[in-house]
Image (cartoon, rainbow, N blue to C red; front, side, top):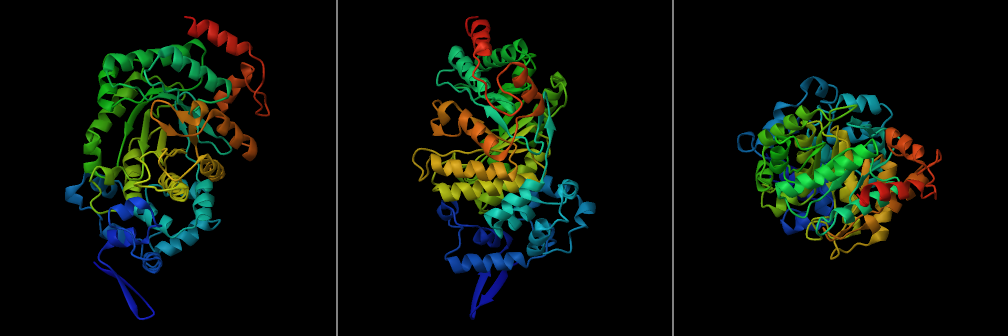
Amino acid sequence: MAYKYTVHNHIYTFNDLKALLAKATPYRSGDALAGLTADSYEERIAAQICLADLPLSTFLNETIIPYEDDEVTRLIVDTHDKKSFSLIESFTVGELRDWLLSDAADTHTLQQLQFAFTPEIVAAVSKIMRNQDLIIIAQKCEIVTHFRNTIGLKKRFSTRLQPNHPTDDTKGIAASIIDGLLYASGDAVIGINPATDNPAHVHLLLNLLDAFISKFSIPTQACVLAHLTTTIELINKNAPVDLVFQSIGGTEKTNSSFGINLSMLKEANDAALSLNRGTIGNNVMYFETGQGSSLSANANHSVDQQTCEVRAYAVARHFKPHLVNSVVGFIGPEYLYDGKQITRAALEDHFCGKLLGLPMGVDICYTNHAEADQDDMDNLLLLLGAAGCNFIMGVPGADDIMLNYQSTSFHDALFVRKVLGLKPAPEFESWLMQHDIMDDKGNILTSHKFQQHLTEKFISA
């Protein structure tokens, strides 16, 4: 159905719900590229006002991608918690925003409503929010997961140690791991993007990480970010797989472009669970997403890129992942042009994922041809730290020499922990203090005793 809003005798018409969502979205280059953005600032405001007045029940009665055409839509509809939704079904989108900002929407209540929210509802309410709204509401959410440690507790801030190497040289990777550990990085995961998806090579890297974690009893988990078909093949050979990685999208066509579907994700999840490698929990999946992935695959069904992104979170939460990472600026300026757009998208992604019950992290990043720099990333880092982001990346020098993009460094995580009074995951924090890497105030110690031990016992071997 069409939606209309009149201002100063001018009637703004939005042909259907997905057009209204697209026109209400804060401006970004990807939607402009797709021809979906509002034609003017006035039209955008008209769409936002129209959207704010929309009853939440509208989103249950009108799908933006038909049920019969898309398995992600079917998942969203079939898993919707109608009983919990009854607590908010009388709200409009604007009233939902006001309620989320109120003290009535506390941590426990938001946890109970995770499956009452659909991705489209959460995307809609985010579109009428200021950045500070996205931050303060996300900060109230607490999404905790477990494998060998506990990720997501309030006042905790974790990192993925990302020791990528352009040729997957094992000594180069090991050196980066040691560097990261000595700066208290790696509690979310030690995760390698392999230079090749060759199963034998991925197996070698898995063995490397397993040996490192086992030798030094590090309370963390490992992941080699290969395609899930490669990982399933290696699990069947009893390779030491902790977390299964996969990039996912918000439409069936997007996931097909990644070579996956929901059935394959279930197979991967079940395979990882069968290894029973977690010591304190069994959250075994690691998903990565990014605004623009559906558009870049010509799989967005004329849906704006942020709404497509939030639909990917419905896929993720179905498999109870340990980590979900929005790689926010990685796809490039065609989709998020500059630091302002990257910042807004990251805060949206974190807010929407948390409200849907996901352990959200953000790769605070940009490509070298984007209109952004490290000062933009510093600003976003502080905003996400204040919002309660579960984890960020720890990359040597903030410069990934294999993927050729700019991210956050080991020092950046120390900075935000110090400024905001945050700590690593509790089990990892205890390990760091046990090995004289960090004291109980979060200060990095200057002793090189453990560094020498690591070097002698691992790299030399």
